[in-house]
Structure formats: C-alpha cells, structure tokens
Amino acid sequence: MQALQTEKVRIFAMATGRRALTYFRAVVSLVESNLYEPAGAVLRVLLELVLVLHVVNDSPEQLDVLAKQSLGENRKALKGLKTVSLDSRPEWLTDDSIEKVLSELTMEQSGFNAHYWADKSGNMETYNTMYRRLNAFSHASLVALDAYLPVNAKAEIIGVRGDVGRESGPQFLVSASSILLGILQIAAGEDIDPIRREKFTAMAAEQVSLQEQIALESDSLTVSPLS
Image (cartoon, rainbow, N blue to C red):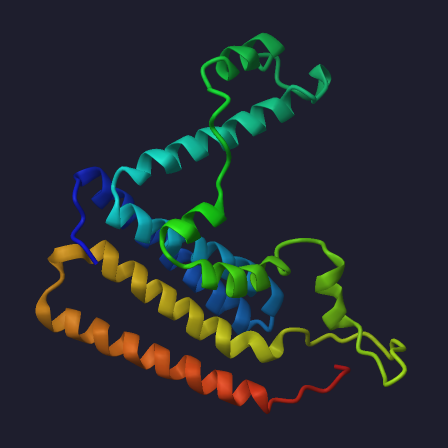
C-alpha cells in the first residue's frame, strides 16, 4: 500500500479509521447480543469504508469523486425536502432557499456508489459476494424473511425462527476485525514502526486462517429450524 500522498488524504484516512473503529465495536456488540442481522447491516458499512479508503489511498484525486458523490446525496435530500408540505418545515426552509442551494449543485453529481468503489479498488468479487449478501440485512426485502420461515419437504412453512443468522456470527466478527485491521494499516501509513508493522502482518495472516477455518466449519454446521 502506497504512503498517503497529501495531508488532506491523511486526515481523511485517520477520520475513517476512527469511524471504522466505532462500527467494528457495533458489530461486536450486536453479535454478543445475538442480534446477527443488524450486525450484518453494520458490517456492510464497514466494508464500504475499506473499499473507499483503498481507492483514495492509492489515488488521492479520488477524494474529489467522493466529495461529488456526497454533494449528490445532498441534492437528493434537498429535492426530497421540496416535496414536504410547508406546514411540516421550519419557516426558514422555503422553496426559494432550497432552490438556491440546488442551483449550486450540478446535475452530474450522483450519490454514493458502492459499485464504483469496489470496481476502482479491484474488489468486484467481494462486491458480488459478501456485499450483496449483506444487502439483505439492510433492506426490508422478502429475501431476508426466507431465513425466518423454515419449510418441510413439501415446501410448507413449519414455523418461525427466532435465532436467524446465528451461524453467521463468527464470520461477521472475523470479517469485521479483518476489515478494521486493513483500515488501520492504511491510516497508520509510514508512521507505523517496523515492530508494529510485523504485528499487523501476523494478525492479518491469522485473520485469513480464521476465515478459512470458519468456512470449513460452516459447511458442517446445522441449526435447529425453530428457536
């Protein structure tokens, strides 16, 4: 990983590292509380953070792209506010004030695009597997409900599970720690001393080994259909 090239990117990396630590703690807390699906939703954000940081660290000019995407999010939010009735807005939030801000935002700006960052970072395989899987935990889709409804050989629903996602808990923890480790390595940059760098490398190898072990164990893991 190349050294951080500008002070702006260094500050961005340090702030991202701090945010990632918060999300990592959230994943751990949720798994410990047996809240596996919410842990998956939070892990999805953690994955987005590392994708963006990899790209910005390698190509500092990409920080401008992230800024434009953020402005795109603002544009969508402002356009949404225009549909809110005047009675539900504060007095200062008039159509004219919203239009004034919108006029300063160009049409070419779009919102955050995870696909873009996955592609630029060379992680499309991760996007098409892990990220898409985590999407199910972030939306109110019928796909997410499948795990709650076990069926018999006749495809008849036989109950409602209450322990959904339990088998994913260990993988979520390992993935979260692996992502955090990668982010902290980037954020540390060249400031990291050789001894600590060796520790980071050793921990990264342990993470890979743990992920492989969990994958093997998961193949033989059976979960009771009802809680």
